[in-house]
Each structure stands twice: as C-alpha cells, then as structure tokens.
Image (cartoon, rainbow, N blue to C red; front, side, top):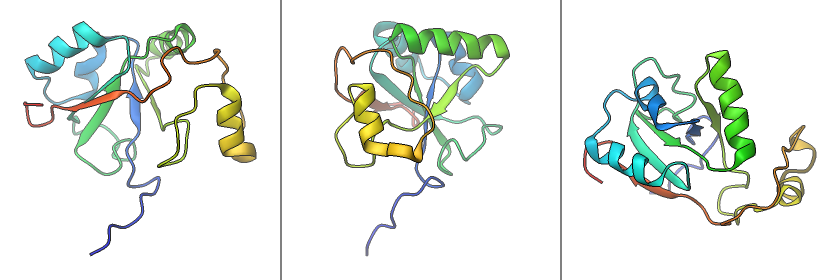
Amino acid sequence: MTTPPRTSATHPLIVHLCGEERLDRWTSAVPEAARRLARRFWPGPLTLILRARDDIDRTVTGGQDTVGLRVPSHPVAQALLRAFERCGSGGIGAPSANRFGRLSATRAWHVRAEFGDAIAQVLDGGACTIGVESTIVDLSTGRP
C-alpha cells in the first residue's frame, strides 16, 4: 500500500509563538513534560506536538487532532511574533522554508532559489545560527 502524497491540506503547519505562555491558546491539554521542555529549550529549535484545541482550524493541523508549536529564538522572528501578539493572533502558522525532503534553508537566498516567484516576499534576518531542523517531540499522548 502506498502513502498518498502530502498536500497543503494534509501537511500540518508549525505554529510559531512568541512565548510559552501561549501554549494553552492552542492545545487542549499541556502535559507537565511539555511545560518542562518549553521552559528549558524555548526559545529555540524545539517543536512540541500536542493535542489541538477543538476550535483550532484543521487547515493549520493538516486535518490532524494535534498541533506543532515552536518558539523561535531569532530576534526578527520574535519581533514579528510580538507584533502578531499585539494584534490578538498569538501565533503564526507556517510551513518549512524548503520543499518536503529537501535541505533546510539557512539563508534568504536559499528560500528564493527553492521557491522562486511562487512566494511574494522573503523576510531576511540573516543567516541561521544553527542551520538544522528543530527537534520534534510528540507529547500528544502525554508521554514523549
């Protein structure tokens, strides 16, 4: 049996937050292990998978009942997220800046080379300091 290709409707986005305090806005339950990991590794390259609240649009979750949450450490990302926080959004759902199965972009020109005219703007905050994907920890069942 083959797995159907991921599409924008079935591939979840990662919701980027400006801080740990917004976890409850996106999740139906936050296990203590998730809170400990968030306190220790956020902001930074850690994505937590948790049970999504019922009112979260399933377009964001790729139709799943879980949501991926991350607090990036980059100052430009933090400034953008704080601005969204003031508007009441509390988060930005975004895909990776590379196509599925391709290397992660570490510079703005990598994103432009990967997507060309398919995207209107690239926010250039300089080169990534780490340059690797985030660690993903699924705590949607309460245990990693």
